Image 1: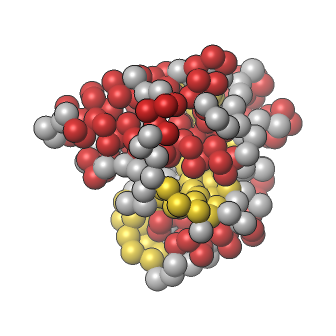
Image 2: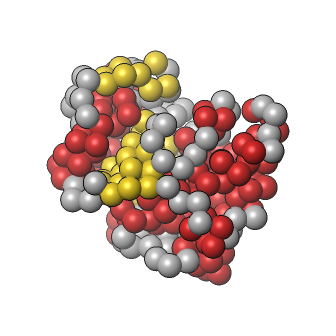
Length: 261
């Protein structure tokens, strides 16, 4: 898509989140800063109805409970029926048996269009040897780009692996996104925010691999710009929102840094 940010800001897609209580406020603000509309409806009594009026669904298992998983499955089924994109952020997969089982249940029960996680979370979902320290990535013993491509084929989903370099694959194409800054890892929530950004870009672009690549380039460019004027995590977070709000397609295109393998 030539001007995805312009499209988002003109159409203002509604992005339904069933997400992490730690970062829910940040995800809502980041969605709004990009120009989309956030809604966070977790109750099983209304979540399907809310998904029915939305343009994308973002699921995040960072603070999961059995009840939240039920709402996720209800909403994802509604999203599948409406044929809108579903993003799953597999936060903390590999840390506990319950988390692993619930992630597997979601993937087995409903259609997930985009599966996002850090290197170890995706490796674990793909059946590779990997450990997760809380919600932080640890090392894996395989080529991440190869894991992403193979898992994308196996799951028929776009796979997004986030880290120092972000890897995106639909099973055929593999993109390596190099935008971003190390300060993005100094505050809690940038990974969750990235899932929201992927959701709102996927809401306006049916090529979910391209949408995911664009989302991470745009978010990463904002991180680079924010870092230039920040003295630490506190000022960086404020500046990140401001840089996202002031982004333009032209600005990002001049700073995009990605390659296709």
